[in-house]
Image (cartoon, rainbow, N blue to C red; front, top):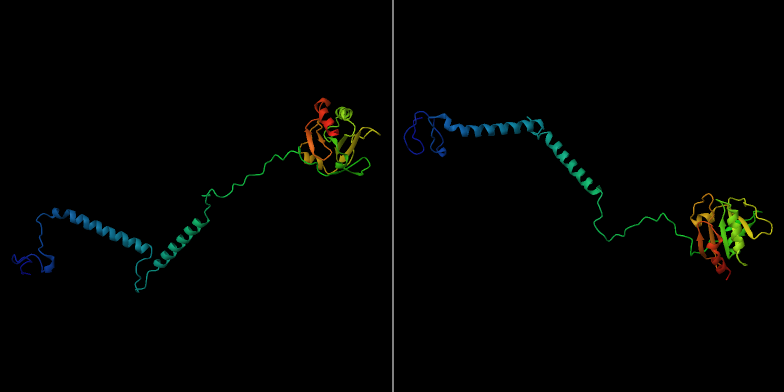
Length: 243
């Protein structure tokens, strides 16, 4: 008390002794002049109070015995778990193909290749006595599938149109030869127990429809008739088979 201020302006009777490094201390007459500084100080105090409260809630404040807070190891463990989880998700997340050098795999076509122009499969069918008959041993031939329709009139017309040397063969489904062939008739009736010929033809059996194959002497299917119609439609093909 009573010492001159830092600038030597004389003794201060109202203030206690202050450190010289503070410089000159001016106390305004109107306290409202310090309102801005007071508001800033209150904001700083609220910020510190909030930070202290959250540190206490998270267990990050030092314990009374001076040991590290319990919440700090838990926080580090949580950060490590989150980092590991993010890494696993990044590695396992499906990625779209970025390059075009990979070959594109096209699905197989649902429509099978036609039998036309290909060799007739080497099939063994059975006759009325269940005796195996090699189908390729009857060539050249017109082979009519009668598992969906007997179509007797169309088969008879084909037999009449067939020249010498060309065999007309009917193939029924199952083991039973139907209809039974006439004795000494021009048509050779067989059965296909396994249904292999129908499967090779890739044609679904339909009522009142009898498809036919024209196969030359070498075993090549030269024409496929989805439905056996009038003999005029295939007469020239039968003549070529005999040549």
